[in-house]
Length: 309
Image (cartoon, rainbow, N blue to C red; front, side, top):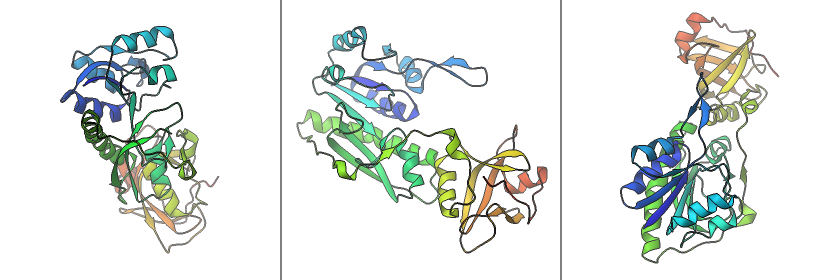
């Protein structure tokens, strides 16, 4: 099967790597190179890097609404376009170009968590399960017919990175299964229940500021959801600390932001309900450290207080 692949980040690169083993990838669409790193050098996306390693044709249009971009895609005469976290809107004209249309690998069990950040929003909401949906794309935002789903439990220790990696692998196997069924004529669409839909809004950096008035269980979920980006933050003695890992501590009470204990196991901070033990922290300009090492460089004592918004 002749495929056009459209994707940008590591999540998409996992799917492309799997497709290359079993199918002909005619070309790869990915977003234009972006400034990255401390030097803000133009950097190719993970998908582009993989595509170039494999000698594939790479197209990086700023938009797919232009006639030139659509002509380039049409000229490839692909059977199907596989899309994974591409980041550009596919207009109707593009959706109709491949013989079998465009299939999207979406990191949730649709219709739950349509949108840009389904992995993080599922963790924040305390969902016990998520997964991958292979979807026939239409003009809506993740509203197309569902073709195949693969389920994945969300473990209590999962953060956004570990769950991302599980779902990336699941998406890679899922799209291969979907294409096999498509070729055999066994793939059928199931309409989404729009009444059950919810939206996974894009992550904003200001979300990561910890509000100690919140329930400790909710803050713990936020710490996991925002790891590795944008990373939860808390203010202590005029320093903004990044909190990489924390543990929920039920049945411990105090004023929100109050340090209840500080030892090698962590810094226990009272929340609006219960408490949170900060286990891995990072000072400005420093590296992420387990609490035992962190406390050697920045002493914290019971009775101290984290800044409360």
